[in-house]
Image (cartoon, rainbow, N blue to C red; front, side, top):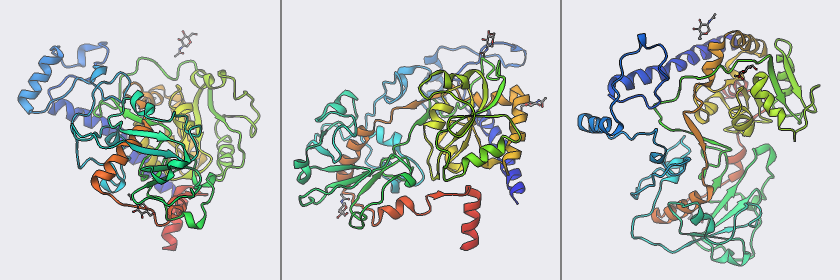
Length: 448
Ligand SMILES: *[C@@H]1O[C@H](CO)[C@@H](O)[C@H](O)[C@H]1NC(C)=O
Ligand SMILES: *[C@@H]1O[C@H](CO)[C@@H](O)[C@H](O)[C@H]1NC(C)=O
Ligand SMILES: *[C@@H]1O[C@H](CO)[C@@H](O)[C@H](O)[C@H]1NC(C)=O
């Protein structure tokens, strides 16, 4: 059964591998546009002759023929403001923008929140946001600085950490705990519960605190204000791959690396890694293994660029949408292929660049995973296919406080009212599994 599932997954994976090619082909046929990333001209014999029009002529041609205006996304300043060098700011108020979970189920809405503005010429009163745990917990100054210096599209907000403002603030942000104030809560004051960690590592709330929150802010995509560890954005959604100008397998002599300090994670990742090591070389650094490299030594992660083909980006818990820096920073931001365990395969697919990792649940067991890693190890073309996403986009700053401000204003404009009747149930029920997701989902099926 597992084997069949793994086969089906691999077939699906192959289909997915072809999808961007099909999309690009379709795009090339349908749109008379140049490829935004011109491949270096190497072997021109099989390549159709390209007509090198200046960008503005191409744009004109497209606008005239198709009535579609396509921006030149290679021009950094044409990118949206939240990208590096981007200067495009929102210029129209959209009363129906997808900002709240019910507006776009399954979507994290971060981009829409970053591009939301108030109607021009309207200057509603400044919203006051109270940080219940103090300024230090957030590393922001009091007042409007945070909104002004980040050039938030909606900047009519002010931060306070003074408990005396509890009776008048428009929103109160609670980090990890709910510490009630001794004043009557004003009608319309929005209470936001923020969690950085996954449910196993957050404290339980008092029973009286379960129904007081209006919004949540966590890494989970169905939070009101999604706060992921990193957010990947393509420069051009149609271009998810680039020609490689180097061989990522070059000079690498070692197979799998893992840096780990907690040897008793609930998802039994250590057992899985040990099992994997029976079939392929796995160097375990830290308390649970025999290799050593001090955390503070930057050369440790350099080894991922130079020596290792694979890196185990195993989270300490298998929880819905829980994908941390282990994957985004240690893995993707080095020249190594991350092998992931944590969230569901579909959740990685939604958050990660296309074809940038291997999920352990694509395989029936550690032995089959090892067999695939050996295949990648022996075939540089196949190995390098996992690096074509590099340079097609970036990890953006998601400007948390800009979005808080935009949402507080939008909520009032829409006269939206919402609260969690049991925020713990939302946060915990069914969110994590101690087994892998396939087993968890099989159990649910069997029981229901
Ligand atoms: C591999 O090693 C050679 C010789 O030291 C070096 O010139 C080359 O840049 C290295 N390649 C990569 C991709 O690091
Ligand atoms: C290596 O992988 C590529 C891409 O999947 C494939 O086309 C090629 O046939 C493979 N080569 C070998 C020797 O298996
Ligand atoms: C916030 O939640 C409380 C109950 O916890 C509710 O009475 C109030 O209407 C909500 N306000 C908004 C603006 O959603």
